[in-house]
Image 1 (cartoon, rainbow, N blue to C red):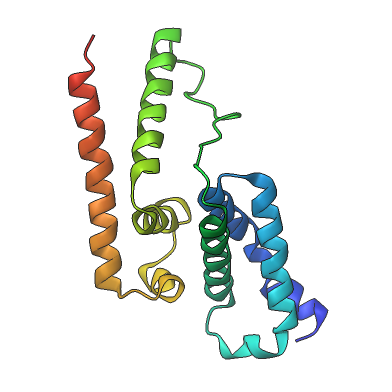
Image 2: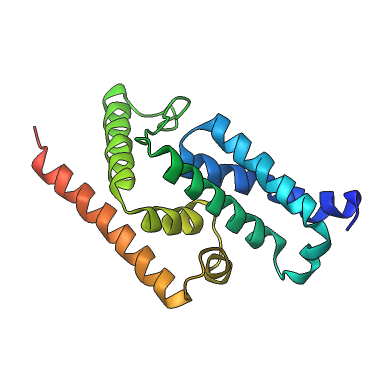
Length: 170
């Protein structure tokens, strides 16, 4: 694989890889570092990439593994960066915007409390829009396991949100 073919087959996945890294690490600079490492690994092994049915899925797997390694070594508390997050379309009243922002904050807290595997599966499916087959390649789980994990993650967030909404009536 030459440079031109690498640019055509590998670089289009850059945004997905970056979003995954930011999602897992909650740090834009670390995500950029991971992305550089991923592309370096892919470039070094460019002669082996033809063996993979989906180079993008392989790159996502590398990204996931490097992020998990980084999280394990740093053992730091995760925070969610909500700067730049826009809530609403501008047509909502200030009260509605505050309610929406509060709901977003609650959901982010519930997502942060999920086990790592559930967070990853939920992100890959609902944010990245990957198929179950692509997720199977990335996570090394069966499609049935992925479906169960996804269902549990969604149910946990939904139930937690409903519980918060019902108990926090003020």
